[in-house]
Structure formats: C-alpha cells, structure tokens
Image (tube, rainbow, N blue to C red; front, side, top):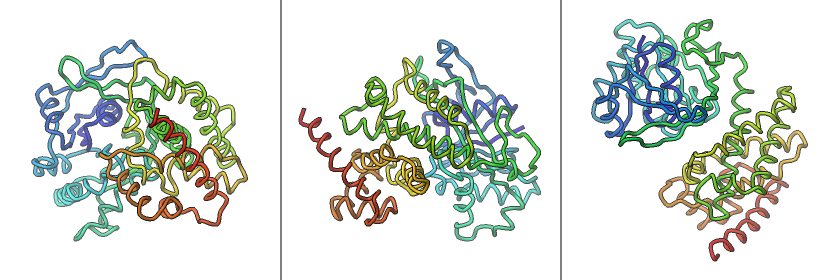
Length: 391
C-alpha cells in the first residue's frame, strides 16, 4: 500500500508517518525543505526516539520524499497512485497545497482510480473540511459532486508530543509514547474500513476535537502567551513556575467544566486528562520555544479556536472563564517580528487601538462583560510585561 503525506516536519514524521508505517504503507513525503528531502532520500529512512523509553531509537523505513516546489510531476504521480493521502502542514497552509492536490485528483480520475481518503491531520477544527473547501475554491476546480467521486475528507483530531532534534548530524524527532488520532468514521471512502491502525474511529468527532483543542491546545497556548508576558523564551520556564502551572491547570479546568456540561464527560475523566497534559508539558529533557507554541496568534484568537471558543461557551453556560479571558488578553500582547500574523496584530493595535482589535479578531462585541474583562486583563498584563522588560 502507498501513502502520500504532505509535510515532513515533526508531526509528519513523528506522528502520522509513524502510524502510516505501522499500518503497512510505503510513504512519499511531500515537502518544501531541500535538506529534509535530501536526508530522507539518501537514507530511505528516518529515526524517531521514544522519550519515555530512555530515547530508544525507532527507524521508519520504506520512505522517500519529493519537493512540491520543484517536482510537481512526481508529486502528482504519487498522488495518482496513493491508497491514502494525509497532511500535517499547519492549518494556515492547507490552501497552499490545494492546487497540486487538485492536479493529483484529476490524474486519479483520468486513470479510473478508486476513491481515496484525504485526512488533514492539523490542529484545527474540522481540518479536512478546510482542505476540501480550499480545493473547491480554486479556479477551474472540480464541482463538489465531482470531488466527492474521487476523494473523501474525514476530519481528524490529533495529539502527540513531537519535538525536532538533531543526532549525528541528522534531523530526528523525539516522540512521546502516548498519542491519539481520531478519525471521522462516517466520512471515510468506505465507512467501515480501518485505513490507519491504532486510530480511534468515531461518529461523534466534535467532542474529541473540542477536548483536545479546548484543553491541551488551550492550556499550552495560555502558558506560552503568559510566559511571554513574564519574559520567558522557553515553555519549560513556564512549567517550572509553580504559580503559573496552577493557573494553567485552572484554565484547562475551565474548559473541562464546559465539556462536562456539553458532552457528558465525567469531571474525573477530564481532570485526569488535564493532569496528563501538564505532566507531558513537564517531561524532563524536552525543550520547546514560546515563539513556536504562540505562532499564528490571529488564528488562535478565532471565535472557534482554543481560547475564545471555550471562553464564549463558558459564558453561555454561566461557567467561570476568567483564566480564559486572561489568556485572550495575553495573546494580544505577543510579539514576534518573524511571525506575519503577530506583526499584523501589532500593527492593527497600533493603528486602531486594543479595543477595536478585541472586537475585530475575536468577534466579541464592545458592550459585553467579556470585552471589558479582556480590556482590564490587557492593561494589567501590560504593566507586568513592562516591569519584566525593564528588569
């Protein structure tokens, strides 16, 4: 069996590539990084290191890589011949891979190939739907009916600790042993099939998406944005700060109480999930930057995303959400000149003011309690940030 995976980064090699390999696929990675493409093709393999097993090495073989920039024909040919197509390119980049993916799907149709599953394994709500819509929006694209004949787009929820590293001059990935890949069963090309082993197949993906996004991604982002306020550059500095760790925990528990009300999770189950998440963030020996965790703040301030989404819903249910509000305010303070969304946010605030920015980027109206609370937190965090910058 043959798989094509867009994105040979940490999630691509360390998570989805690992599961595809265990499911018996030969893998073609499609990427834009010449160095990793060259390494994969030279070795015809790559290495993973299991953190909890004293960094025991696991080698993934039967792999090759092509460049979507310089090897379009090879990419299209691989797509035409694939038994499954997956992605991990960041949700913001899904529209960028849509054109070559469309060419591959046209080639499949012309060759009379079977309907293929396309799974976008991104940290975003209804990720495969985003990719499907990106294809349909292309000029001269297939119609919705034509696309449905050649491809299925099951949404996914993804979760694994994956960290890039280097050993003996080679790019490698350090991985956590625990993971979760949840796949929308009823949207598969063949709904009863199991295209990837050791995944969870469900008819109710929403609750898994929100559990991951509103607890783990929420807590991680909150820790990063608050860590930036205190002048930290590494996530591990935040998770060595006992008072901040307790605030991260309470933020995640705010989301957890919401999910108990919405989906009937037990509070005990979600408390254990929160404990697991914090324990993972504190895993000895790992190093992760605040700039990486906090990148793309505009996307992370969206109405349905990790901070604003649970905050708004907590408000609807009459549940506590002050820590979530604080995290939203901190996100507006994040600065990284190399991050285009961060710069866009900074320039908007400089021109229009924080009040207009809150409404513009979160959709929260100015006359609401939430708006006032975010504004108050923003002013308080500004003072804290200025103190640490001076110190």
